[in-house]
Image (cartoon, rainbow, N blue to C red; front, top):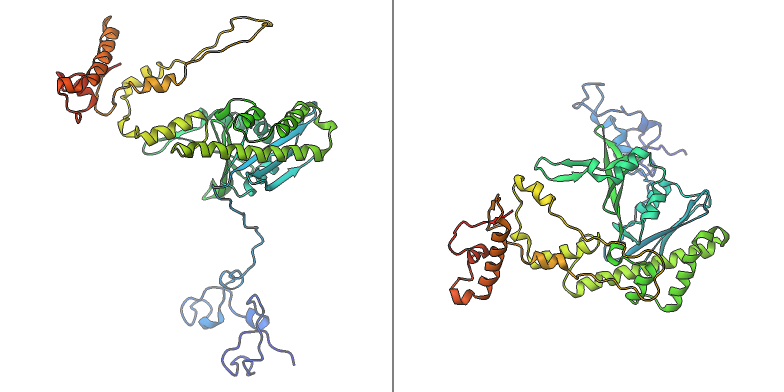
Length: 424
C-alpha cells in the first residue's frame, strides 16, 4: 500500500482517513502533492481574506522549506589572539617576475596553510587565503614586497588611494578623523602605515559595506630595523646552523626559478615558523616590563604602551587652533650626511643619542593646568629659558620655599603668577 506523504491531521487522519502511523513525512518537511496543495502565502485572518481557505491550509516557503535547509558555506575557523601567526611569500623569475607561493605558520611549528601557482598568484587568491586563515591578525617581516605582489591587480587609481591615506581622510560627526576604506572585487581594503586590513564586502542598502570577520596584516620590521637573520640572532631564536641555511637560501633568491618547488616551500615555511617565534619573543619582552602592545607599528607602539602605563594621557590636552600651524612646523628630525664617498679602510663608527625625544618630553609643561599665550619679541627665547630654569630650580628647592606638593607644576614654576602660561 502506498503511504501518503503528508503530516497526519489527527488519528485517524482527517485528510485520508488512514491511521496516524501510516502517513509519512519527508526529512526536510516538504510534503508531496497533498502538502503542496496548500495556499503559498501568509494567511490574512481565519479564514483567509485573500483566498477564503482556513489558516491551516497555508504555508510559506520561508517558514517551511528554508527553516532546515542545509548551508554549504564553510564555517571559517577563528584563531585566538594568543596564537602568533606569521605569513611569508616567495616569487621567482626576473622578466617576468611572478609571485608563486604564500604560506602561513604559527609559533608551535604548525603549518596553517599555503597556496602555490607556478604561473603567479592572483590578488583574489591571496586575499582569500589571508581571510580563510581565521586569524584576526597576522604578521610579516619587511612585508612590503609581498604586499606589492599581492595587490598588483588593483587599478592604479585604487592602488594610489590605498597607499596615500590622506586622500581618504574623513571625519565623524564628533569631528574625529578616520580613513575611508576602499572596495575592490568583493573586498574591503584599508592601508595605514604598513598595516593592511582586509574584509569581504557586500552590497547593503545601496552601499558597499564590510561583512564578516576581517584580518589585519602587520609588518613588524620597524621593531628590529635589521635583516631577518640578524634579528633571529640578536634575539636568540634560531641556532647558527639554521641561520646559515636561511642566509644561503636568501642569497639564491635571484635563482629560485632554478630550484625545486619543494626546496622553496620548505624554506618559506621555516621562515614563517621562526618569524612567529621572533614575534612571540617581542611580546614576551614587553610583558616582562609590564607593557602590552595594542598595535604593532614599531618603536612608537612601545612608547605608546609606556605612556599609557605612566598615566600621561590625563596630562594631555588639545592645543588651540591658532597654535596648530606652529606645532606642525616645530618638528625636527635627525639627518645623516655623507662624510666620505668610496672605500674606507678600517672600522667605521656611528654615534647617536639614545632616547633624545623621550628625555625632552620629560621636561614638557602640563597641558591641562597651563594656558596658551602668543608672545613675540627678541627676549622671548631668553624668558622661556629662564622659565625652564626656574622650573628645575623650584623642583630642587620645594621644601626650602614651602611650595605645597599638591599644587600644579605651573604654580611651582611661577608662584607669583596664579594664571601663568607656557609660551609658544
